[in-house]
Image 1 (cartoon, rainbow, N blue to C red):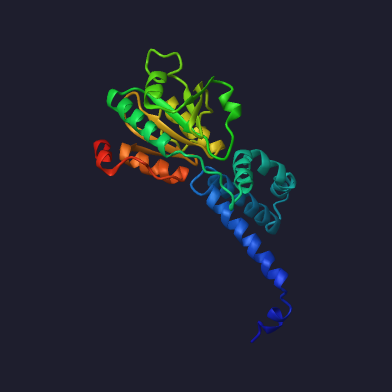
Image 2: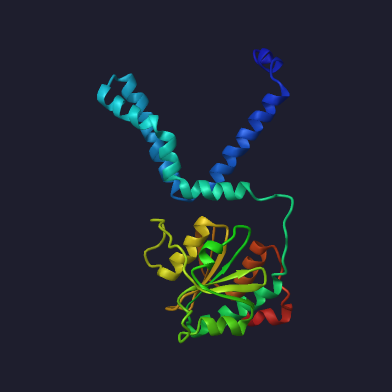
Length: 263
């Protein structure tokens, strides 16, 4: 009954405004969930609370210091969250209606067959699938190939005697565009200390882009998949096939009676 005057003056534009802002906050929370940004946001929230507490208790020096910091809070946020802001802008730039689909199904099969063989032989490998975010700035650090993706090609690249085996392979659409690519290492302190450089690079590229990385451990032969700054370790080739098919938007073409050899 008391809310009637409020609803009486509420316009449809206000409802639209509230809905858009709520959606943006929701997407922001999804974006930073499970990342180090959550801890940073908590730290900034503590500083804001301390600012108002210092004002209420008339702690003049502390209030002045925190006020000086708060006056440049926008610049601080941009510096601290530059990677998260970059990733958010890339997500916003994607079209939710138009998606150019490339025939990845056969590519997935060749990759799964290659990493399954390398896992058995404990040959280290790092394979990156480019999605909507271009990887040209990283591809330039490697050796251009522009070759069709095949099991034999990947095995040749990552053979220990190959000069390109230490770097990453980048796959764009249905081609290996470059090998021996140098990727940024993850700086996330939450990443396990037991992970080596190859795994940290796999995670690092997915922190700054929407790429998907597949890793074969040289020590254990275990398969891992990284996406969105997170890594799933010790998965089977069958699980890898399913995950890649879902992430890349395709279903495997491998006949069901042959898939059991990878389980």
